[in-house]
Amino acid sequence: MTTYTPETLTRPLPVPTPLTRPFWDALAERKIRIQYSPSLGEYVFYPRPLAPRTLADDLEWREISGAGTLYTYTVATRPPAAHFASAGEMILAIVQWDEGPKFSTEIINADPEQLKIGMRVRPVFCDHPEGDITMLRYEPETNS
Image (cartoon, rainbow, N blue to C red; front, side):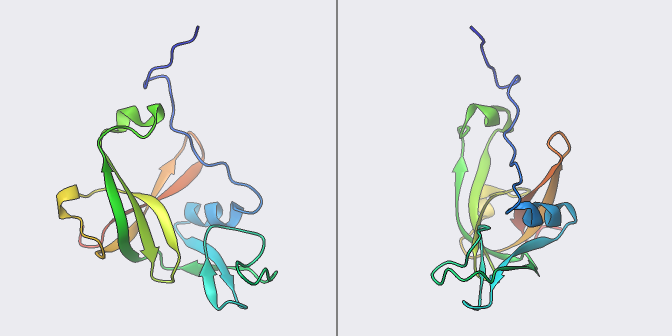
């Protein structure tokens, strides 16, 4: 029987698909690109083949600033899965982009005691060479 310990487990990383590839490629370039639907007049996230509500085939990739507000968060003092045991305390959050959609992420470079719902946050691009992927994290806008 194989025993897995936190040291033998690596964090699961996203696997880009043809549909999500433009999002992941943009992160590697330190940009954020999400879909926009002209028929809705709205930005859309998560990547999908058709616009929500209209089912229009008009989605196009557009760059956004990535700036937003902290919509909600929780401080995970216990790892959400064995793969994250070595991470220690994690701040799991949802950020609402200025362009509208919400994004599930992790807040870094922050003291949980200083976080406030509605505070401004900015993107941080985190490279993971073992997975050849860039992850999008957030930090309070007031950090220098």
